[in-house]
Length: 243
Image 1 (cartoon, rainbow, N blue to C red):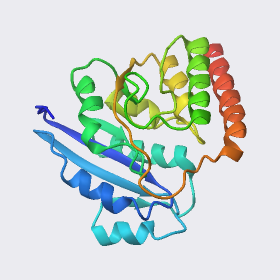
Image 2 (image 1 turned 60 degrees about the vertical axis):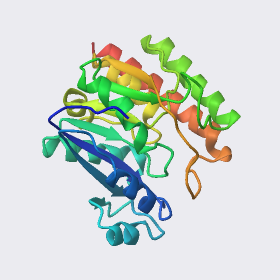
Image 3 (image 1 turned 120 degrees about the vertical axis):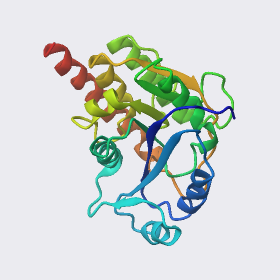
């Protein structure tokens, strides 16, 4: 991995719900991460897990927040943005707590941000189609949301549900005011585009979750697609009407 020479504060936001078997491995990987002249702070946010996620975070000595109630992925990630803004971080990285987003790939999404190529960088597994590609059903849903975003706001993002993202200070300042609640990634693309932020997609390698079970099951995937589609459409119409 090439060296990145910057003098910036970088917060890695890691939402965790029942990730007891993954947080220790991810923490070790992040501890070994080095970006020259950059202060890196991994922030785990335990979203009221029912397993031993909280205990394991305490044991490994990680920096973490502990939600007293379950906020869901949207509320938990937005809490991370608020933490980043209030503590004067220059950049924020959104990274899943299940191990699907290798820290070794982080330089690919932070470097374009450092070079002012965009305000938001989305890590995509579908540009070069390498690494873990997810199930056929998930790929269908991702392609659907990609086409929906293209139709609504004219931006083409191949991996529209990717939660491996990097944000600059400008983007963070917008996201503390609004971030979608449930399964927020496709809707956030529409919101950020309306806010005139530049979004860029870069190729990354992802892997299967280390352990545990995804919160999006096959049974709920149709519900997920319908709900997110309607939320995205209503948000687009609202922001368009507000100018």
